[in-house]
Image 1 (cartoon, rainbow, N blue to C red):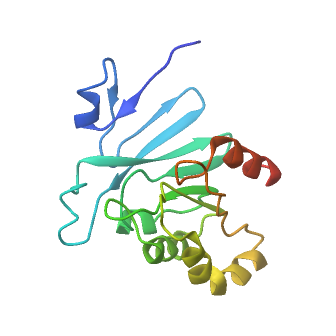
Image 2 (spheres, rainbow, N blue to C red):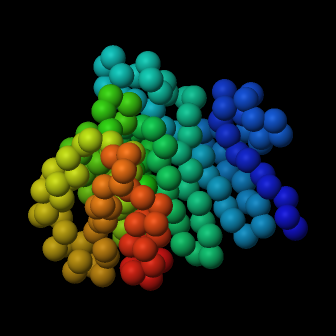
Length: 173
């Protein structure tokens, strides 16, 4: 119907006029899209000040039967590792605010998304993630899954939007 709805956690909603607050663990359905707020936070001592537990959200979207997880700034939390039936996961990999390649690999091995799309990786060496997942790749392929996509570097040390869309189109997503 042309309406735009912005969902946000408490502190972000304070800065966005008309935003709808969605707290950790809550969900809403808008039209045919289900939005679930997944807790995201830092778990490492000293880094927990960046994203304290209970404040921020990642979002699990269900659209036309496909489940997309957009982690936001977080480390590999128990809530993330407990996710099920995720088709595409966008996981951040950039210290000191998000995950190391090791954390991304552990999370991916735990909840096994069909497609893993690392993002927000700045100068992080993405080949390290490939190396860490190498042993898991053959097992995932045996299950018919595409284990991960490491996007090409863009001009700002991250993937370009055009490159991301082209990769997903090639995968039939």
